[in-house]
Image 1 (tube, rainbow, N blue to C red):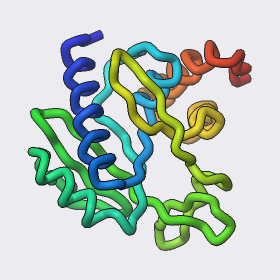
Image 2 (spheres, rainbow, N blue to C red; image 1 turned 90 degrees about the vertical axis):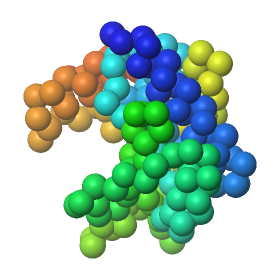
Image 3 (cartoon, one colour; image 1 turned 60 degrees about the vertical axis):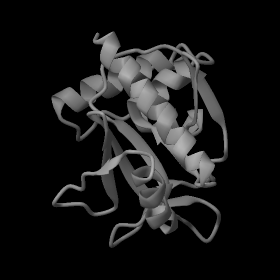
Length: 174
């Protein structure tokens, strides 16, 4: 495991948190880094930092990050998100919208329900860095299905789920 890169990514998360909190922008870390914040340990190398944020905050996010040294590095084929980099560390945003019933949707042409519940405002801490993360139950649910995923992605999710299994006695998938 590349601990120097992990420290650089944690510094990027701290900077991201500071930039977004300074502008009262809601966001939530998800994916592998959310796992690490929940288990309070760096469990594996991460390619990027996955962040969910309200689609309505897209312009405010761009202004906040650009004013703090981030570079906007969009992909050609973006659909519901965008990317930013700081000192070579990449953050990939997925923009979400509120469902009429309070849940969270990913606004594809046919909106996809991500969570029937709001993400909340829970924060976790890892190595002195604090950030918002998606709720543990939602993270567990997303990491327990390996069906339809490529071998590498399924292996990452399996490792993430096994790490989460140590948090509050989560049952391992069958």
